[in-house]
Image (cartoon, rainbow, N blue to C red):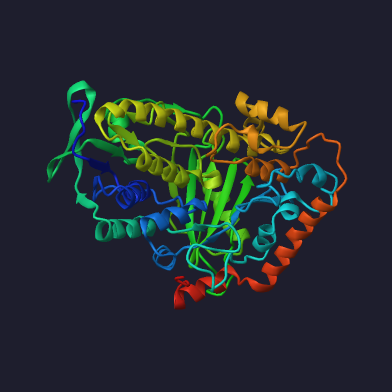
Amino acid sequence: MSHNTYTKRILIVGGGSAGWLTAGLLASQRRDWQVTLVESKHIATIGVGEGTWPTMRTTLQKIGINEDEFMHQCEASFKQGSEFINWAKSEGHRYYHPFSLPVGYTEQVDIVSPWLGIKDKVDFAHASCAQSYWCDRALAPKTASDPQYQGRANYGYHLNADKFAQLLKQHCTTKLGVTLILDDVISVNGATEGYISSVSTRDNGELAAELFVDCTGSRALLLGEHYGVQWLSKKHILKNDRAVALQVSHNTLQCEVASCTKSTAQAYGWIWDIALKSRRGIGYTFASEYCDFEKASKQLRQYINDQGLYVHQEAQVKEITFNPGYREQFWHKNCVAIGMSAGFIEPLEASALVMIELGAQYLCDNLPESDNMMDVVAQRYNDKFKYHWARIIDFLKLHYVLSERDDTPYWQSMKSDQVPQSLTNLMTLWRHRPPKHGDLDHIDEVFSSASYQYVLYGMGFNTLVDNPSITPHINSLFKQVTQVAQQGLDAQPTNRTLLDNIAKYGIAKV
């Protein structure tokens, strides 16, 4: 390639959430670039990722989609965090990882040490975060009068992933000027110095661009098949590599809609339970080394039955296969992978969509203005996202390492085998003092020290500190949590009530 400025054309290969989120962020923020997306009519998206982080609110605002339109089109409900059931022990234990920060966290007040002295009276999430009380009651994080994308607590969404991709596609093509080409890519064409010059399609010939985004899922047509960039499997650390899933109707149209993802540990993995307005998406993530499709399907159906839900015996269980890990590089020459083509570990803590958001936003902020910038931007991107993926692995592994379960070989292995040294070092530190802001290196950590606090102390981790007395200031913070919690219990509607209200009247536009 010549080392000059060039025509600014981006070609995204592949649709789904990864392709269309990337297209939406690029087209809304970088009007100086021409964005084209080519997707096949013949390849179905996996359509499993139904949980988002609060970051999705900012992303949708940038793209220019109204919250009520999004809620309606995607059958969305509000998500305020995750509830973990039977992770620490095989039965009778649960805790929350809420989306809102612990009280005093922003001011760097240590509330963990004084809480350790009263931990037998109140669990950490309820002591430090009013949102936990609202999740207990399936309340919404906002009221009908709160404006678009604003609430009384930090929140994300549960959504129908297929309908989400359709909404993004419609918005990008009709409002943002993204060119959609429905066609199959049949070859990738190289230019000088190993750069991609174009892709050839079955019906539309060659599609040329200066930058190519690989959103072709685990196939990784460009980065994997064309360039041969290797997949680094992390199955030796996190063994889950399969999932079975079913969509189940609510028993009644009036039943409560849980405002958190429920993650229930099982003998060979864990079950996610995600409530939308019209149904629940329930799936079992497991390790094929210890469990097969039949056994997992049986346990999934047993869980559904235990929830008092009905699923027809003939209902087709969807099977998903994945190899947990990520690419050796994410950006090579003039091709960057976003979505499952770049990496995927497992559904725990819903990191898949947020990594798409992070990748696409970084791309928007750092598009090379000339091709001699390409290598520099690519190296910086690769360094940053290798770090992100490594930290995600640390955080997910933490959930297993902290468990007291040893009822199956699966749990024995997940707890003790191949614990990353970076995680071991942090846990050694936290044996002697609580996690704090400076323990993690980057300003844009995927999981902050607040998230580590919720999981560590939710799982019963013990930090050996001289419990300081609860000072008047600390006591006022704990009281503040219960006061805010009570205000919400008095004023906030249930998820179901607010979703019904939005369906009728929409969300305030101011």
